[in-house]
Image 1 (cartoon, rainbow, N blue to C red):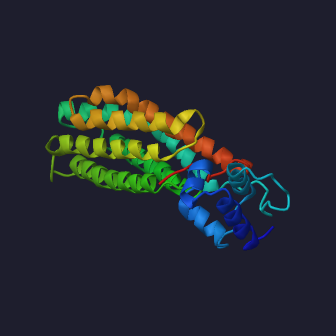
Image 2: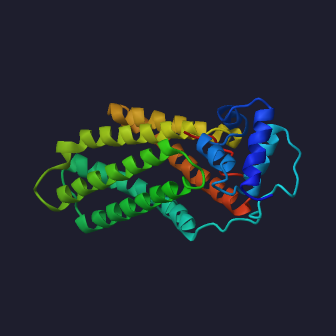
Image 3: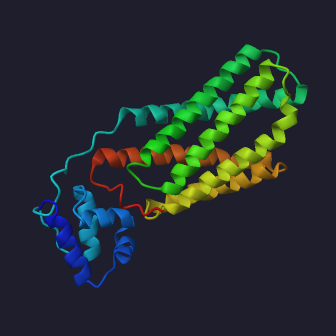
Length: 265
């Protein structure tokens, strides 16, 4: 069945069950806007989205109701590149943290070119990874996460710019703004972590665990005194984000596990 007939039938079944659109959202973990657009015939949902709705409405599946778009979706190459960038960043970050610690302790950097290369590589790979997560939001809607990701990208642009200026010019010293840097990234990680709580219905509550790790790490980093303790949950937070990206990429590729079965704001 094609649109707009499909949307009308879904609307009829929903009303026959005495459900509002908001109540249907809770049962099948779609977002309200998606339900509204499907019922209005504005979009043709994928087969797995239809199945999620039919399951929630307790309507028997029928091949006549399935969308013609039942084949696996081709995963965009940039998502794989973003994951690779995130993996590189994960290991590069350890070198950057170690070298930055020496910079703060000694007040100077012995090899500025090497440190600049490490910082630049860390910045580019991390921003690329965050950009991949932003792109994933199109498949797995979460407006809060999208905002948090752009905020974190902005924080990185500002802070890394200050680092490069401090490293190569006498305009300022890292000691002058280091505590501000900690507080900025603390806020960024806490916001980013909290945004993952908006996802519902992910297996094993993985997004809730990831969110908790990011929130704890952000709070500890923001406090300043808990920076070293914050590195442990931060490490697992980054690993969790990499794992979640792979999980979502696999769902896109299989085409039978919905992006829309995750409820988000």
